[in-house]
Length: 89
Image 1 (spheres, rainbow, N blue to C red):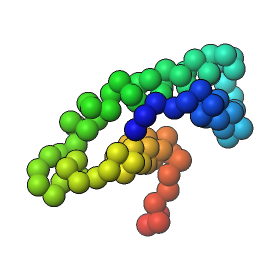
Image 2: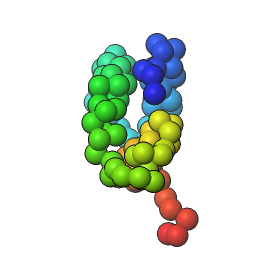
Image 3: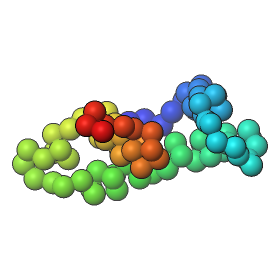
């Protein structure tokens, strides 16, 4: 997936400020720099993430779209942050 446009990075920045429920000691400027860095990290490490997925015929790595792979990474990260509940809980 392509890096976010500046407008989309600003949307992420605003969403974080609206949705964050924890107290924080960073500034809005620092948050914006973190959004920019996180987006750049996604671009820089897409190949590494893809390589980390199990390979082989019929594997997720071989058959999933870029969007599906991105969703998988997001779901795992959200679960680790306690933000994604499963239907079985």
